[in-house]
Length: 624
Image (cartoon, rainbow, N blue to C red; front, side, top):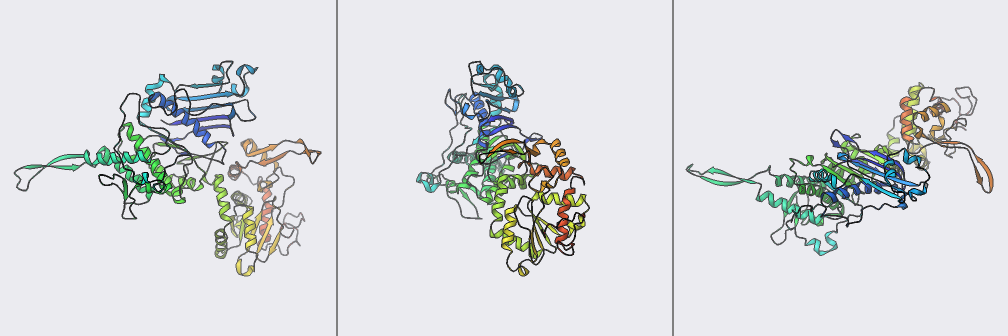
């Protein structure tokens, strides 16, 4: 059972979202939802889980996870976005199964006409089916009519949801966990009932019991009898031989594979305690033994529990597979990086996900390390990341938390030491621009404007923001002959209030503002009206436009002029598009940067005494 599509409109912080879940052939790509707190990540998961819970109720009516007559997720007018009259949601699964809901701010009969937004969307069938005295309507084909189809999906797939409030009590918290004994499982065989749970809060005890069953079955049943002749060859004797291809043995090996990945012990094995203390332990030559899996750290427990639960849930379907790579299903995890150390986020978790290629992982995270680790383990095209609340697909380095973490890192002494090392080892003068888009634009402009030789004479770096450039300036304003052996230019955008200044080999400079250009701030100020119009035509989302309007400022009426700004979520996309499709004419404004570089490298004989190369007679940027 896979999810194929999620639509939300006017739901809480989400204005409009339409995500089609990607596949590589029949293999689902992991989907990562990122965004600040309150951006709607858990909201998205709740709609998917709601559909899965409804489907399980049809497949196993005697094993409800929600009381009869109640729902997992409420439909309420409280979730309607403040500026809207309704919200709409729809989730589409495999086999054309779907669940959709429409909630109005008031009864349908209070509306004179069908709202245009509803009429032009997938919400229209719900509006048409809604009674006039109602304000909400649920529409779904997940019903008793599709029972056979749904049962088949559950019978061949693991289906799990790990909420953000999942928690396993560690052994030190109570003696019961420390003395926890594994017990053999009892499995219900009644029609309409199941021991499987979609929502997984804390199942380490269940996983421990499952492991005991698997280990016992492997030793007791995965054997066959061979008859071997005796030494005198006159007779034969029966010899039990362990069948390493048996079903229980295969499951044990997959569990051992997970344990080895989580603990990072390549020779780890699972062992069972003595008869009166059947605790599951982990033994290894690499490190000390773990007498009880409840004694693992919180992060290791979370990981082990998550992936053992996948093995156990799929095992309970009764479906036979040859390897972990054949396990199918959907696993939804809210805050997948919960309790995890940096190594587990970056290395261990992505490798564990990679082990289950046919499981559709839909997860939320705040961890840039996890996203970067997924990029390392699966490659850029092996998974997708969506930034909420907009639902825009982004690359790992565009993740807001990545940017915040990087900025925090650059404030540390380590970053300053790295900069100093780079300076001391540099063979050419160094130019540090504010950000990665500045660097890309300058490199593209040099190619188009014939300034490649000039740019080749410097080492151009991305400074990670204006704050980092200021930190570099403050750090290297000691006796510079010892600290800055190479010339270094800190190149600020036009909207920064930095005074152009030179101290020995260290120079800081603002790119002069081009007053006639439409974008007021940032390096995009160097692009003319023609270029910005061309970009807007290609993708309107690149540029945010605030039209001229009246305002009151300190009690006085004022006119606020029309303003164009680069959308913060589209800054990288705009840069990529202009660098790929821009022409020499689009980048003419960047001549001012190359004049700064020429002066910085000593191309101007005397600072401020010569006219600029274009003959304008304006003072050079560095000298002011």
